[in-house]
Image 1 (cartoon, helix red, strand yellow):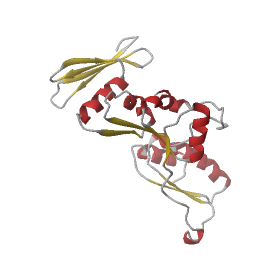
Image 2 (cartoon, helix red, strand yellow):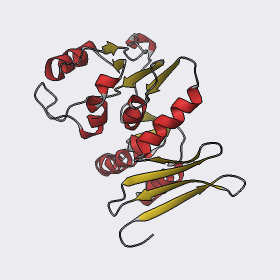
Image 3 (cartoon, helix red, strand yellow):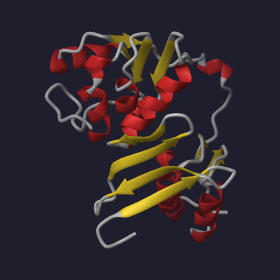
Length: 219
């Protein structure tokens, strides 16, 4: 690393260099060198381009369906050149910023999805309302709706609800922002000592979240 750039080297289990990644002063990848065992050194201009190459190599000559369940992978998947590669993008939430009505600004995390959607075969959404909004504002026609599979259950089957009691059921990862929920709950406890929050799940943030619970004296 120097004052303006960073070089990251990757080695395999045999301690052989197989990839180099170059980052500029803004920590953005500007070049990737992949040392292919048969094709020699292959150069890529971004992480997206090498992701697309790698996914295409895995597929071989067979038909393949690529689903960008993670929004950040939309650009990589859409860059795959093969004609027999079917590319499916997925939205798990609202694509607009507040007030989330037609004309609202696009949520930045969905930028790649909308920029590269024309290269995809399908864009899967949660609701028909969202599909209508996208068609009206962005003129995108390849939208399909697959709603959440869990339907509302009869309240009679739920039993008696306990007051001041809440449960979070989630992966314990940073993207879920459980830490903010814990911090918010500490404010609730300050006003209501009988309030109880149970967090069910596991993940790489478990230790950090347990430490945050103890720090806020919520254990």
